[in-house]
Image (cartoon, rainbow over all chains, first blue to last red; front, top):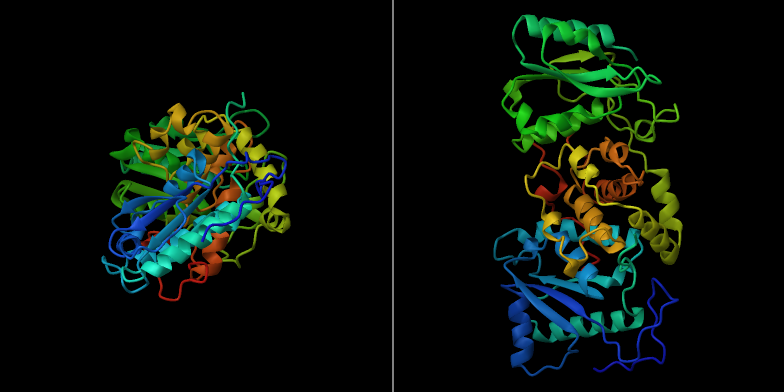
Length: 160
Length: 283
């Protein structure tokens, strides 16, 4: 599961800046309480290994995720964001993830439009029974972000 | 497009019949034919009112303040303004019975260079969609046009796009004029203002502007009517329409050709859903 680090890691958005050799990705995981959080719990109790780059926040439903959370995470520290909720039709609140799906599409397209790679922000549907899928998803996101390098875009401070 | 006399007559009639306490319109600044919004309280002031193709501002913005909230107001709306008014009515920000709306079948307004403004060239609904009295000849809904700037930028590689937008965000001075000039930004306390601590660099930095402008445009996604009051108010002349038009285009293409504020009681694209919404980007 461990990904080999390359000799030189550069940010895909700003190739001029080289990452320090000990750099590790920081992924913000925002998981829905009823499916994905239980799914990640199952991953742990089943002793399935996944990369330790993810920091998890539990929210009541994937439609609780305001696009603001994603932007704030990227601005503050995170190199990538993973948002996970129930499969369509399985929402505990009947239709929350349908509303969330619309918001995610617009957010993803806008972030890509302003110059972030589209894999910086990823979404997944993980049910409470899919512990193995959660490990795969985290491994994929972690590997994508390791390839893309640290996020340097829009990190400039004190311009004036 | 000159409806000065009709608007003056209507305003005078409304004041004499005591139907309104306040009339919101445009007056000439006396310089270069430019116009500014004016709030008229008395019958004798109605001759200040004008309406030509220099009447650029969205007057529904004045309805969100406490000053006008409990008054009976008459106002002038163009096509785009009437759509934002429709949204404000749907979101219970104003009461319909307090308003007398003079709708305009708009022929497009001028920008600072004296040409027809870009949002008027691409306008989908030039006629007022909600009114008590309509001036001009309605032409009906037009076909949706994709913004040329968006197309041009979307074809550029990722790195160039990032550099372009970083320059834009770098010039933001965080004066919040965009927010104050937007008729749909009516929250008393904005969520963006929580992040003024240095921890999140919410202040006057590229990072802070990224956070503020992106959050702002995503909170307006599916509601923005492209009146471009924000761009007119921006002291740094940032092309804020890029963010809004991008969202509008994605929503139009993916969510059953949704356009904000066209029908009454339509709360916006994010307040409804369809089973056939695109799902292929989700793992």
